[in-house]
Amino acid sequence: MTANAGTTGTDPRRDTMSETDMRAGATAVPKEIGAVVLKATGLDVGYGDTLVVRGLDLEVRAGEVVALLGANGAGKSTTISALAGILQPSAGSVTWRGQPARGSLHRRVRRGLALVPEQRSVIFGLSTKDNLRMGRGSIGAALDLFPELKPFLSRKAGLLSGGQQQMLTLARALATEPELLLADELSLGLAPLVVDRLLAAVRQAADRGAAVLLVEQQVRKALKNSDRAYVLRRGRIALEGRSSDLLGRIAEIEQSYLSEEISA
Image (cartoon, rainbow, N blue to C red; front, side, top):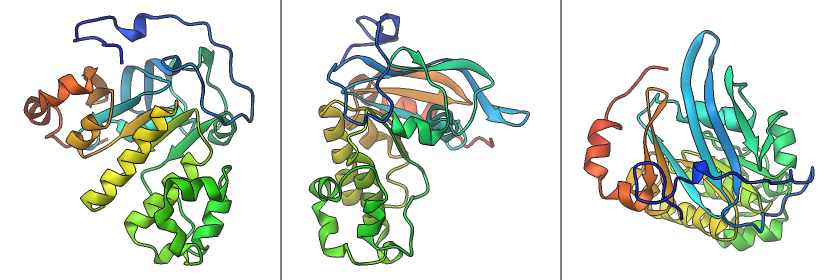
């Protein structure tokens, strides 16, 4: 992937592209690998009078995984909510393939967004199969991505393990072949092998052309499975660069940017 600020090479955020907005209702991933899918400029977001994210500049391109890192309370989930249309920014702009991103979450989903929130979005009283039916993709596509779910199709989602529930959530999202995937804390509370499985599926989605923004608490795994990363500190981008470069500075990053907890 192209380099950005703090690395040798061209900052991809300086590039300008003329992209037509994708058709409403389309869900296939884009063919233009490297095209800017999502861009936030000068974004301020908060809750009531409390500003959590300040002046955020961020972009995600087709075919790449971008990790969003930071301590608890740094503003990662708030950023995801704003980019998904759940929260309205008080300043700044969000564009989708060069066009202003407007509308609620469900409208953005119709345009090709898939959101995996921090809390697992499964309906406990429904079977695994019925949970998959609720998605816009096919059950077959979901099971191709996670064949581990096949023996549990008739089991209620509430009786699945935490890892199986997260596989179900991610399978349903990726089965739509989204243009943009926003994933918030996939690994929360899960065993290492399950985390590796989930991150591998995210990586494969990007390799097929999806743009992925990944909030992840396991920093080393996030950097190993991403192309670029941003580090948030107190609601501002404190550091950004190629993941391979940042991985070489992991001790510094953990000590300087990820060790504190901030109330927000």
